[in-house]
Image 1: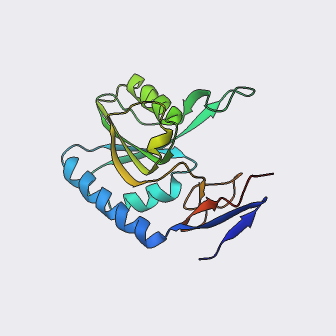
Image 2 (image 1 turned 45 degrees about the vertical axis):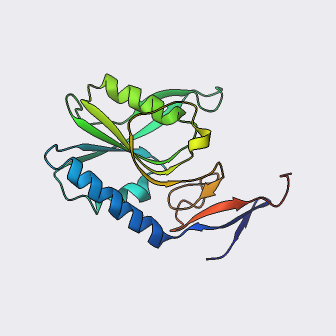
Length: 183
């Protein structure tokens, strides 16, 4: 694993694929036990969750369903102004839902997602996130049940996480190296 340079930014290896896979197996074991007789619906939040959810679902051995959603925002609004949840496609009335997220930082997206799924009639909603930035959270959540890694407020790419749509395909996670002020 080497450093990656793009747009005057440098990224260094941070969490290797083998560590990610080990943590996913542990989270999946917990989920398999806690939802053994519940037939949950896993709802992945696109685009960032696709690699994480794919690997997670390979370790889930209980009856379940899967769906994906995408958050849409109005053009011209400040970042974080979410307009709607697109694509649930599964009747969630009275169902146990596990939301699969790549990273939770401010909490804006997951807050909106949870509220939208509650309106769909979900019986319970639990969140499974690969990365959590606790210091960045602007809300309190009591339903973030599964976290792969807690990290500082740093910019990360790889394993589904992107920079301007690029680097989602990297199997490891990289973090930005601070080499001084950005230009």
